Amino acid sequence: MNMQLILGNFALILFVLMVVTGVIWCLDVFVLSKQRRARADAALAEYDARNAKLTADGIKVDNGNRAALEATILRQPTWVEYSGSFFPVIALVFFLRSFLFEPFKIPSSSMVPTLLVGDLILVNKFDYGIRLPVLNKKVVEVGNPQRGDVMVFKYPKDMSQDYIKRVIGLPGDKITYENKRLTVNGVPVQYEPMDDYLEDETVVYQKQFREKLPNTTHRILNTEAARTFNAGAVEEFPHRENCTYTYDKFTCIVPEGNYFMMGDNRDNSSDSRYWGFVPDKNIVGKAVFIWMNFGNLKRIGGIH
Image (tube, rainbow, N blue to C red; front, side):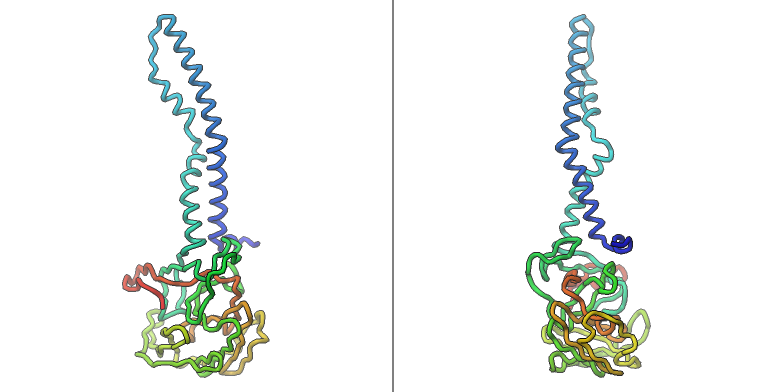
């Protein structure tokens, strides 16, 4: 495992922190605290014996220091105190982001108009099955991605990167893209024209359509001057033999255990058309909610 992958895997970093602070917390509860208690009891017994002797000799004794002595001996070392404080917080965050919801920030415009740069989103981690943290191995079947879902996954070319696209093809599906229109299993997808969309980043109007996949309807963008498809940009990837490419068309049959992904900003998205299929093992979760965009508070709401 290279350093870039480790640094890019926040779950791994969080897991290591949880284990380290958890071990220190357990060590303190079951060993160190008992040792401190034993030292305190011995010191207090010695303190009491000395004061009893002084009292017997007629010397007045001030017992006010007894509590301070006990507190000093029982006080946790700083490294133990901080570890004990951080452990429950880290453990809670690790559990929430591993099994329930994980936050992400949209870094690019490939999913415009559905998701904008700067959108802060929540990703459901259990809809597609419960997976072991860090290893991302599915251990409990819950459900599978459906056409039209907006899904976060590990980029097959670099597992340290998280990508977000829309599920277009399920295992076994035949996907054809020609003249900027999709056909799924021989059935042409329906498109409804909408008003042109002004993209903030490029300040250029783009053609906007309502795309009607079998399970959902959502908006997509097309750049009128762009080619339907750039066959020269296609990379090598597993199961590439399942795809055929021409100048302005491609057809792919999605292999078992894989998914075909595309961005809603169709002519400005690097996706399965160019780098291949997404294996089930790469799935992170389903994008379900925009919880903040500091540049546009109206963005808060569900993802469709």
